[in-house]
Image 1 (cartoon, protein in one colour):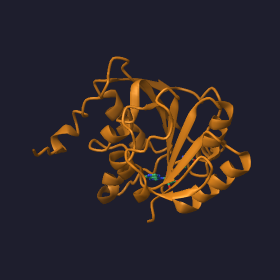
Image 2: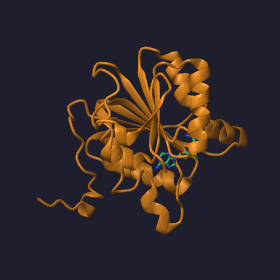
Image 3: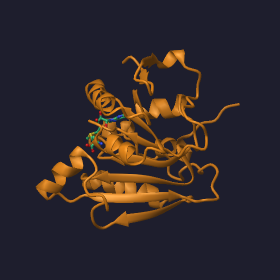
Image 4: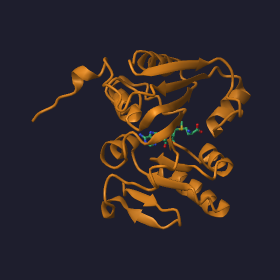
Length: 219
Ligand SMILES: C[S@@+](CC[C@H](N)C(=O)[O-])C[C@H]1O[C@@H](n2cnc3c(N)ncnc32)[C@H](O)[C@@H]1O
């Protein structure tokens, strides 16, 4: 896959031409990141309602990424940057850690087959990458309709020493946020929604206790 980034004036740039980590806004600009934004419904509506904030979207499917960009272009969304690529790769190589006030992950692919589970955004050895995006006091917003994956994510987040986790019993105050959520609400499916807050005094989250054993460090 060609890894490309669309700038605020909607030019496409190869990631290999950028200096890393990608630093797109001044540090004082509040940043929100959505991983797997699909057709961009939440990213673009949230960006329109908060023009003083910056929004970074990551989407691996070229088709959806292009669709959302066309929408951003039509709406002249000046505070949105989207990246087409795989989120775990981008987080580990290209993005600034400890920067985001909010990370949104709605209905991520559950990868139910055991041999595919390492691709999940939330599994013991990947969850640290997602959490590394948060600044102290930053919040992770998560939703899924997948019972088993939802239970795993709740266990992982609740088992993290630097997070406080709130399970939302009802819908978000702003209603269904994404296309998948709107569809599943219409169908009456049960949805698990979680909000995890990184401690205010936590500059850098510790490694998740369940994943730490898999980390090999060599000097
Ligand atoms: C089930 S869809 C949900 C889309 C949207 N969040 C919603 O709720 O309507 C999952 C989305 O995440 C994207 N995706 C899956 N794994 C990804 C990854 N590792 N990095 C970036 N995007 C990913 C898929 O291409 C897809 O658009």
